[in-house]
Image (tube, rainbow, N blue to C red; front, side, top):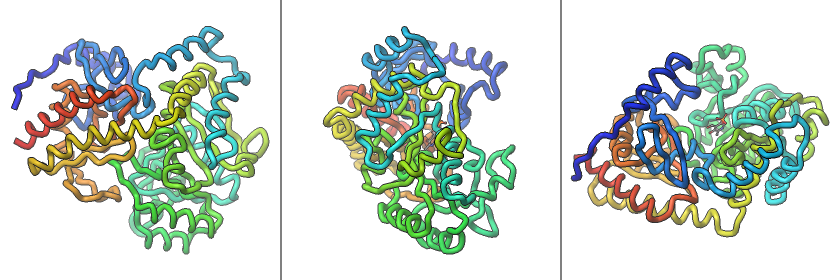
Length: 435
Ligand SMILES: Cc1ncc(COP(=O)(O)O)c(C=O)c1O
């Protein structure tokens, strides 16, 4: 086993000390705080292709890809040029631009599931707006979510399964009134019996069932397709809208996301991340008659000062144009399998309790052996294995999202040579932690 030298993090450490005086926990989004791994956050300075450089001059192969948006890698020339050219005409007008039409056309002309779309500025905003739309369209108030799926920090989604009336939610964040949480039912994923019981009892009150069709916020809880198909049928039979939150899976597992991959038609879809090419964009879309309820056509109010921002639209157009090219997703998946297989073969040969679970260009580090995990409560809460491999990988120049519940992403910029280098770092790190 190779001996490694810990990377120098002194500049990052000192920047974090300063940041703590400005921001709660020193960060502007909690998972960046490195609470579940050792040390303080690494302050990044530059990204190019599949690489990141930090303020101490360390270079990493980046598998976080800004939590998913950067499917072309950092600083892709086409995205960069389109952003710069939009910016030369002004950063924001608060009036319609042709760029909004172009991004909508790029999506809607290829997407058989939605007729109209509304651009917003984040995934959270998309989910919040689309939940309001589901309630406005159906005239019903309750929503159903699944334990282990994350839908942004919308009040009614900051909810966990309660005791007693098993399906009624209780607030999972201070500041969310229990009265809001009580509007949300929470069920385990992949549990048909619980699903059927919930629909039998509550469907008259249910506006929608929201799910990440490829749940990727608590590990990778790949669902049985039959579970999603049954959910579709129950929704149709009971006038409940099926809401696919494709903020991660949209434009990631295929241009038309999980809906396209699985061949299941939801009623409402939310997008984010990849859609904005690295700038803040979210969106929700649905059939014409549902979208007709959105203001100014309909009575469901929703607005945004920077919605459809021209610079963000430009980034989205450039990125999605590349994603729409023939063979883009096949190539992504082929390189992902190439990477994952090298590491899994090594772990298997050495008998390590470790597997990279993957779908398309998403992967997750599972320390639960070969068990297929489909429900949030099946994940081993001991994240010690992840904490150790995270540190080993950092020292070997590989950067992951700093939590064992997060997935990794492969971008177009990760060539086989980069993946070989990273796979070697994984093998050495596994040898080090299982030694
Ligand atoms: C499935 C899903 N929905 C919604 C969100 C919220 O998106 P944002 O962080 O852009 O608000 C996320 C963020 O990770 C997500 O993964």
